[in-house]
Amino acid sequence: MTVEQRVTGSAPRRRSRRDEILEIAVGLFASRGYHGVSMDDVGAAAGVTGPALYHHFAGKEAMLVAALIPVSEGLLEGGRARVAEHPGDTRKALESLIDFHVEFALANPAVIALHLHELDRLPEEPRRQIRRLQRLYVEEWVTVLTALRAELSPAEARVLAHAAFGLMNSTPFLGGEVDRELRATLLRAATLAALLG
Image (cartoon, rainbow, N blue to C red; front, side, top):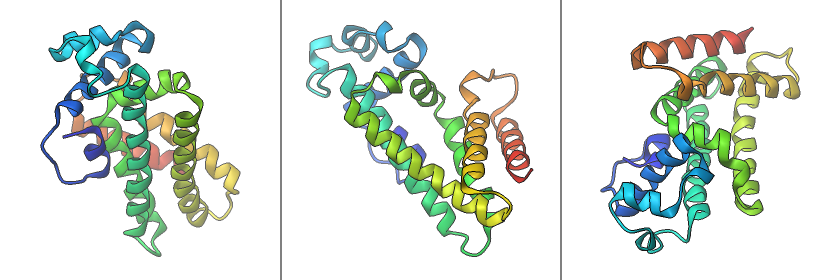
């Protein structure tokens, strides 16, 4: 299953060689840093020569873009779908958004680490596109929060949404001493408590 399918929940399709290489590259970038990984490193880990990678990607920047833009698109699409499932019930919409984001975070720790540390290395246009998608995703949360908590201004709700992302996105830095289901339960409860005040 590709990163995008894990975010959107779309039906699994047969993984392409490009998907496999991208997943390997994301793992390497997340663990060693973007500048600590060469095309040859990605090729060696994928079992192909560095130059053969250019059949799939124009270079490392293209890999980074291919990893991050679909994730941002998937978060926005998934967030909108979760809100739409609960018209008129903002508490359920918030709980659904939290469930969705916690599942994403637990399934994609390498992507989160990559995003946190490497987004600014992208060229201006894809970076602007990702930031725009992120802002739209945040606004889904802001809309739900301000409907649920009338005392919050949109700016205040935005602060809470970003704080919630920080909490949920802490997963790349969590050890395996707590099993996945319990981590999910703890993250959901902590996030809901933080947002409800």
